[in-house]
Image 1 (cartoon, rainbow, N blue to C red):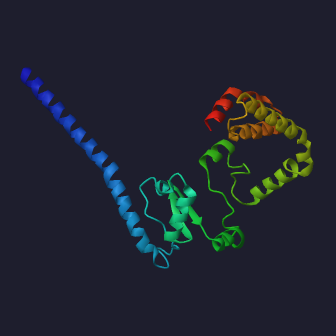
Image 2 (cartoon, helix red, strand yellow; image 1 turned 135 degrees about the horizontal axis):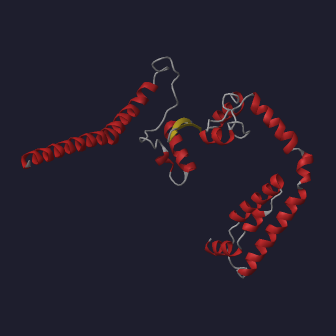
Length: 240
């Protein structure tokens, strides 16, 4: 009986070691082999892009700086993306391809390229990228996320005629005037509480103003104005 128990325990230990070895190999494959193969594939890309067409007849893409697995070129943007893009354009040219995570973005940094994109080929670039969030929440029918086409043109026409017309805009003039006066009163109250010597942060005040105007115009709801906290803005203004 004791001998059988010892052999059973050794078999369980061997099985546990085999499972641990298999799990370790799987982790090595996921975290080492896959990124390594991705890097090798990224290194080979510029050489294949130098030819007029890639294998399979697909047109070649614009030049692209070396990227990282999963992140792509996000690490190259830094805290000042406009300066980083300017530096990258000096190296890779006025038209380059960046990979922002899983999203591919073509960056145009010249006036001639921007004119071609916005005027000569505007229909090719007029559509919007597909968004899983927009398709799930708005069924892909929202005018801000719908792809360019007949439905988008019809939705845009409805918005311009029934929501953004001059008559409709004038109908909300009283709302804008009331909220603008309330914004001025808040700024005066904050400046008076700070003794007139503090620098006020208007970013959140203007955001709340816009939010309140939209809520009142769209839903007739004034509750957004009640979320204003003078103490919170006063503290933030003093730290600015």
